Image (cartoon, rainbow, N blue to C red; front, side):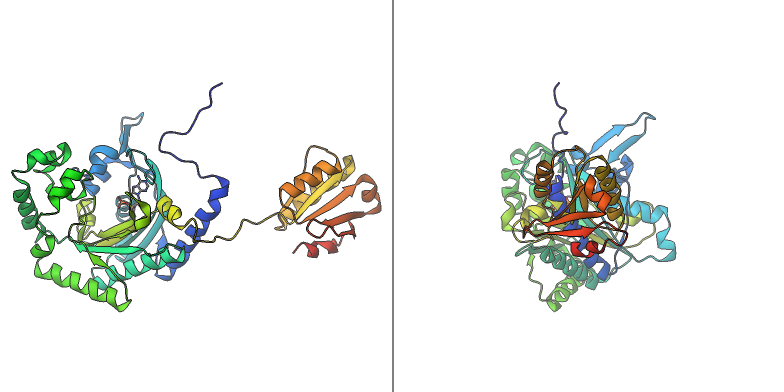
Length: 419
Ligand code: AMP
């Protein structure tokens, strides 16, 4: 019969890999907690409106990439393509802002975008996501970036490169938009279909386009830096001076607008030369209007998302997660009553936290020793029916080959040997 395989762009994470996933997750939890963040877990499925309103209609994600379907109750639902909108929905729905408008949250989990799968790009991928709500202060922007870089380095990422920009606010961005629109007017013929279509609705999206011809054109476009209002200029200058306090190197990239509509003021990306075309490992920014746009009060926010798979690809050689724990003991049982005894002992030791294995195929000693060897068990306890009667067994050290007689009486003094 033909095997059923996984859906294209969806990947299994096999037991050999999960050790590194857990290690990275542990580091994230440890570092984010030190910065005052708490974990939130939100559903992977949301009402479609949450993303169309949150991320913006005229973005790649909403226009082309969402897994959207009608369920059996005819409700229009979407597998989340990112976490920010869901986290804000939860923050508002549970009135977290009523007790304390400041919420520092993180979540780790799968996101879904129907992009063309290629190296470093999947349809189900994972993000480590942080959202800091309720702070407008530019020092927070630098603090978030400091935390992000510290985390990336803690898991072995070498030379992360920080790009920052300010995207302005509703007071100054419209003038910039108009100026980009006029700059692109007359160049429609050279733009790709998507960009041409978006000229009227969302001309800044051209900055995100991956098509070479569009990229070429947009390099000569006006720079947002020249359009920032005094408040935004000042905010950005303070972000940069706060980064300097921690000696964080950065490049100001006035052409980085990021692919989602909700960003205001600070936007940033962490890139690396080691990822090829998919060179961003993390990205984020401030979204001071998003909570209001989603029906909440006027509360500012800033956050970032790290691509888990890309981070793992980057740190394959440099991070050293602790090796997975090998079994402390293998119990080789020979005979019916020895097997019964072994079954009870094996599970009792596990209940005490020992990692113990045994075989259930009633095979000879040689096969059981082979199995113990394969599982890399340090010690083997060999029990036969006769030994049960005598309340004794042999304990073999698989590394030194040394074998000693141990008592199977009540005290099990030999358990201490297993350390
Ligand atoms: P974004 O939410 O688009 O700002 O993406 C944040 C990070 O998630 C990116 O920098 C990537 O590292 C990662 N990412 C985004 N899309 C994908 C994808 N399709 N496959 C793998 N990683 C992705």
